[in-house]
Image (cartoon, rainbow, N blue to C red):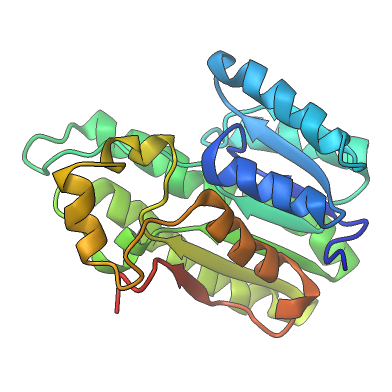
Length: 251
């Protein structure tokens, strides 16, 4: 059973990691996928992903676009609407971390994280709610983090940005529920991606895994499965919620 047959989904920051896994999962379930990548160094990976998704029998297109830039988001969504006709699902996944102790953190580091992790969610959501309101349906999924719920030393900017995503999600859900548009967040714990490659083994990995009741880091597919649930009609009475996909880390 394909849960997203014929739907059009946007996934930002999908050249690798969680975003890539979400794009693949959505295509497996019949969604046409428009996804973004930001850097020239990701162009080859993005092209490969586009080819992979197309080979799965859906329409897919990669767009080089900076989610942390309002004008770029506006142009991207305009292009997607021209190419795909509508947007049913939006996964705001683009994100970065520039970890540092507060004493050493520069203003530029703080602002860079806010721009990509939090501002981008506002920029993209502001654009995609227009076609969703016209259709009187839609699912918006914002990628937060368990760090936004718990905080973590050395990650004040990241934690603040991801906590902001949760507050934004709740507010949008209240604003748009009457239009049958749902807005939820996913709060992953430690996920085996390029961003956490330094934690794959050794004492640091053992330390973090010891605090996770399930005893392991998540795979990107674990997070994609939760995102699929929120994108599909299986969750059509779920809105304004944050699902912590963290193996029990925040219990």
